[in-house]
Each structure stands twice: as structure tokens, then as C-alpha cells.
Image (tube, rainbow, N blue to C red):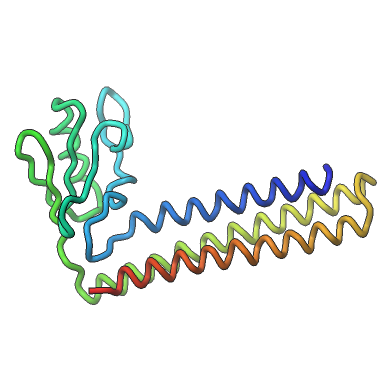
Length: 186
């Protein structure tokens, strides 16, 4: 592998790790309604679990309400069941056309739990980034051993990988800090 291939692979994987963190953080409740809260919801329709975004339009017309409007009205009951069975803690209200989810304000204890979850997700993301760095460094060592790159090139690649991890860890920290701030706001 060339140095460029190693760096490209490492950077793509780090970008994916931060992207996973970003989508995980979107599913964490704040005091406001956010369509991202139900993104992880899978609904049993047509014989298979389907992501809610594929079968319904999800919106937040008010700060404390999420509205789920199915593309096929026949799936309304299935969506309602999935919401009740999920661990989201919402009580769906079905009016025959749409499902409304009222997002209750968070108590202080629940907010602390949410902040703890944000920190867990951040730590998982950092562990993933460190594993990617380790893999990149091993690949660089192997390339140098196979005489694909020189010792100096290997050292340069390792330094660039270190710069990448600093960049992506800072991005992950910023995402988590912003989400913590959202959760703690009343």
C-alpha cells in the first residue's frame, strides 16, 4: 500500500466513526421535539423490519410534538405498535391519519442520564478512532517491512495519522459538547 492509500483509508474510516457518533447523538432526547428521536425506530411492515423514514414522513411542527405521517395509511397501526414497543417512552396518539408523539419536558435526573449517555457515545467514538489509528499504524509498519515505503515515509504517515485523530477527536468532542448543552437547556 502506498502512503496515500493508507491515509485515505484511515481518514474515510475516521469520518465514518464521527458520522456514527453524529447520528447516535441525534437520537438522544433533549427537551425539544426532534425528528431524529425516532430515526432508529424500525417498524414491522410487509414482513420485515423497516426504518420509519422509508414508510412515513416525520416532522416536528411544534417544540414539544413529533408528527409521523405514513405514506400508506394501512401502516398506521404498525407504526403505533412499534412506537409503543420501543424504549423511547412516548405514548402515540393516532387520529386515523397521523400519529402524534408528545415529547414531555425532561426532569433533572433524566437530563443527567442523557448527558451520561452522550459521554458514553463520545467515549465509544474515541475508542473507534484509536482503533483506526492503530490499524493505520500497523498497515504503515507492514508496508515498510514489505519495502513498499521507506522508513521516513512510514514515520510521516504515522505523524499524519496522529494529526487526523486529533482533528476527528476534536470534531467528536464538539458534537458531544453541543448535544450536552442541548440536553441541559431548559
